[in-house]
Length: 185
Image (cartoon, rainbow, N blue to C red; front, side, top):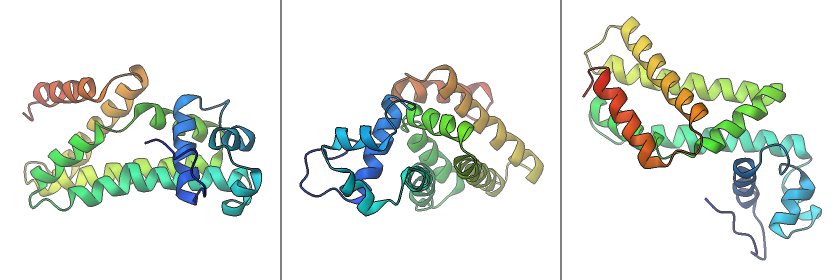
């Protein structure tokens, strides 16, 4: 997920990709207009063409994170015919997500109420979808589907917090161990 630094014209999407990349590298120090423009080798005018100010950029960045790290995974999963296949694909995609971007977004949410609202929307959407998949499997009551979805999601978010540098393979292995230990594999 590298922003196309050096392009003649920088699109809104390019700025957002650069924002995620910067958030990943150093969430506090690099997420400024000056730092983004320096990294992109673009003028502030290029930035302001797409965003009215830094607050608008950060909000757009959080919405972009919601779209690409949550809604896109759900859309891809929904292409599978059964709840189990959808859940398997969702989990395969989720373990590929960059935990440093997730952490950076949560750090932003701790400082900014508007980002906290988007982060809560992300968490709610992810939990609702997991709950739906477990409910549709026919193996769990509505209450148990919500509980197992919450436990699974908390384990994933917690794993990202304690092991932010984990490679996707390591995360996938830990997730498989989680499934085995919870009797779901």
